[in-house]
Image (cartoon, rainbow, N blue to C red; front, side, top):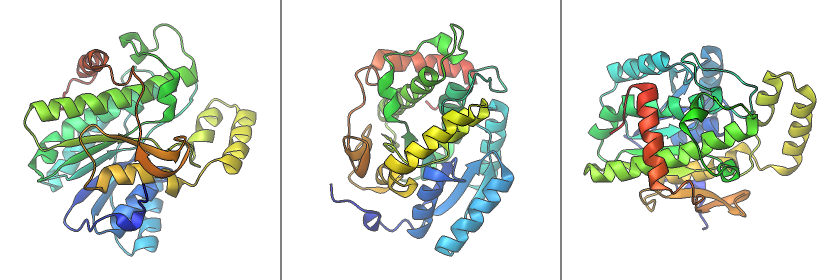
Length: 305
């Protein structure tokens, strides 16, 4: 695929919301969407970081990004953020579920779920459900869920994993949260089409990209040596955050994207231009996806469909 960001079509008149857009992939995604004419809201939990990100986007594009306070690890906060956004917007054309945490020490969300699956999956599940009325009012709504090639490191997810009831290993939990992202993306596609809507659900992963995720998790647990080693390795091997955002941007903007498609980097899914890639067999299991959906509805109290 010879795609580049120059191929992004004119997005004038389209409204986008990008979670976790204060740095890394989210910031790069927001920048390109703004550059190509979209109205962009960056949603994140730290108001000061959001303000700095908005200033960077203004300097880079000459355009103003809106800010939405959003803590995906707090379901009441997700509801409040969705209500705030819905109070000032009638429609939403594009939701990019990008935010995430990686390899953190054991922590719980406000609602008692394991932090990684609670933030990366349950928070986005609830946000998508809360914003679905706005999405369905748009002409051609699209939801892009950002996963990771780390979803390939696990073979399943169980309801007990939502609360880490059978023990906790940080990389296993991260892999399961990313598996949940793909399962959710594909089940959202199936349900949106079954309901006869025009909603397009697609997914992406960035390969190995330089972001703060590689070091923020270990540092949260005081593993400074691990963080330094990962930081050095990332600088040497990884592609830029801008390149890491290409699969997400392709999934979010290309007219050629098909429902349920999943995109990643072209070079062994590690780096390079975006291409269509295939999730694992577990990620494509419709029965597991239905189970996860039911668990997520029970956990969050809401359902996108």
